[in-house]
Length: 492
Image (tube, rainbow, N blue to C red; front, side, top):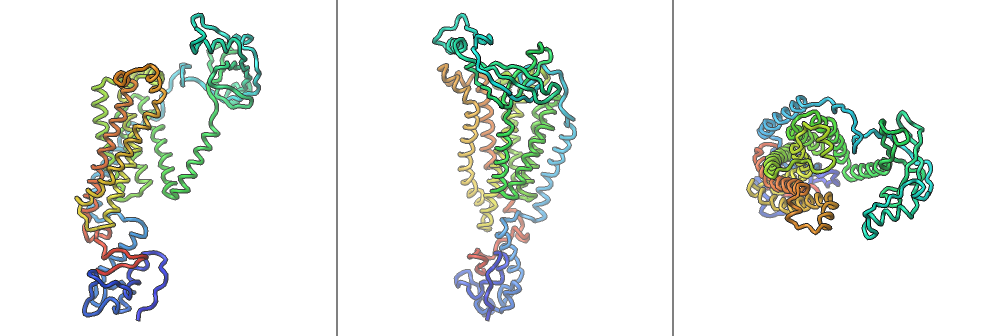
């Protein structure tokens, strides 16, 4: 008589203890030495035996396999695979580390501020009073001599001539001139209107006359941005738990690499492409291993991401040169080129393509690797070809959604520019041929090609790795039978 089983606390606790009296007869049931499964020695269940014929090693292996189902699929752990993966990734990680040491900038280079654009001295301020005044009294009414009332310029000029302006008193709240006040005139058609008590960002021009040294250039948005960041972090930790927490830590580290290494190194005059490759590789290694653990599955995702990044770098370099893209297309890039003329702007464009593609690549490669691992655990008898065919069907759906997402993301960022071309009734050919749009097209298509290529590359690597694990290893050997309910399984 077999003692009545207790309710299992984990699926792994029940394997080898439950199921012998309830085994379902069928092709998979294999009595041994004349004893049926229902009448096996009660001591054999307690010791994980496989019947009176005795295959304790198989049942012991079943216990290990059942444990992997309780805590997620285990990565291959055979020494052979560990050596192969380490032989590839350890030199790569060492090269990334050496590259960061050699290229480490030690901080951004100093320069004298030009007072143009972002290159201005700024302080914090607060609006202490707002007064409605006639625009004529503050000399804000300026009617262009050629502006017709039907034009936007003419309508704005008429509004300024007949409307009311705001005269805001602003107090500087930080810096050496803390407590100093100045007056800011806000015209009726200005996009940014000031309110009493509003926190603002003010620019300081030391060479200007005293009354004109300070001016309002923006609104202080630190509180809503900090609140939104807090909501985001809370949502990630609440849903992702410890893995979400590690993802946030990896995000902070990624921004650290970007701000402490990539940007200063480029400003110091290092090759933007080399800096981007080294920095992106460091971010990839830190983020993937921190979020997903030091496992063979993560290592395969790293390899797939690396191959895709190399492809993106080669394609981007070739097509940026072929299309004669300078990378200097707007006021910000023009200011950078003026301040640091030695920076290779086309290389900076390519560096942006590589870094911008990295985040989506991580998602694709990790998802495909996990799909292959789950398929292998669902059917350990599948070979590499069968695994690849099954996983690539998942990958095709992923390709369609990711490429569409990437294109729409770039289109959304360039929406004001697209509106300008639409207003000008420009043809699609002339719009695509302009350098400003051509940069975005090359950025989108090169990144998308890398994403598409990452699916078959990562899937093939994962299928080969998970199938090459030797049968004697704890994770590579096939299960003794399918799981039935909570811990029940048929004997083979």
